[in-house]
Length: 426
Image (tube, rainbow, N blue to C red; front, side, top):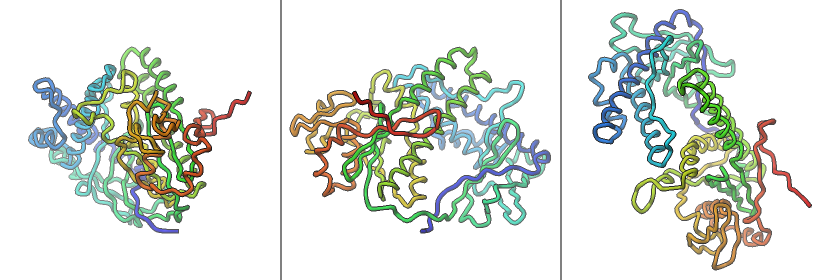
């Protein structure tokens, strides 16, 4: 077994909840108020000049606002950063044709004022692992009326020992709906498995199939998006029946949809990593999708069609890649990201580059060497070749049809796992 430093988030309960809840409530309310101030400021700038300020611009502008000093300066900066990111996410959807996308709303003061998550970075907390306590800093405004800090007594799982971690990077106070809990973000040294092999596999993330895999020894796999699309359709119908998009019923539906999507991402990344272990893979190559929303020629948003635009922006590509990376690292497998430029229109056999070769979304036919391939598998193979271009066994396996007929794994909602699609025989 080898040692490796990785990032981990541990959840801790607060043992002295009654003693600190009023203080934590005050911080959570303050974060909501600052969020609303940021919301109003960005909206005003957007209405006047069609521009969304970046979080550093928003922070510089609001530093003198009285709500900014309710929290520790680093905590206030994090609230405004989340605010700016939320607006940019909405604008990304809007410019790509999603007319259903609404700008991030206010955190309203109704019967129960919303308690926002409060993030404390390195200067905003002090951890005492000997007595299991953490001191959380307040802003100067709140210090005038209460103590200068909140002292929380915490309890983690029995297998978690914070005294052994490399470093604690931040602490988040999170309201669960019933009480406060702490999320402690650390760097820890863990044992990871030895590299299972020297082979390479590539992962192409796409619109029709969430993932297409091309292995170095000449076989491929597809993971269709059926279940996520079914969920989108089902929850859209249910949400449309809600009287208010901010109602308790709508919030429950959104939470359930998010939980199911999260489970899908975790299950898929775990399944792919286990397949790599079984196949002796040491390197996973993932297509870098950071520029997928932009047109290379004019720098504007690329038009993927009415439904394609909506689908594209409803996925968390980065989120999935992060899950895949940390699960792979635990098995000794490295993950690399490479550019996807031209991988969808280039023949993986002869290198011929032509847009028209992609006959339709699921089919690629080369007009030069007459290769017939699943379009996503062809793209995945091009991604793999950028890292491992010479594969002696690959040419011998071209004739078995793996480019055109990949194995397909479907997500089974009953078992919550992936299983090979059953072949229908006549």
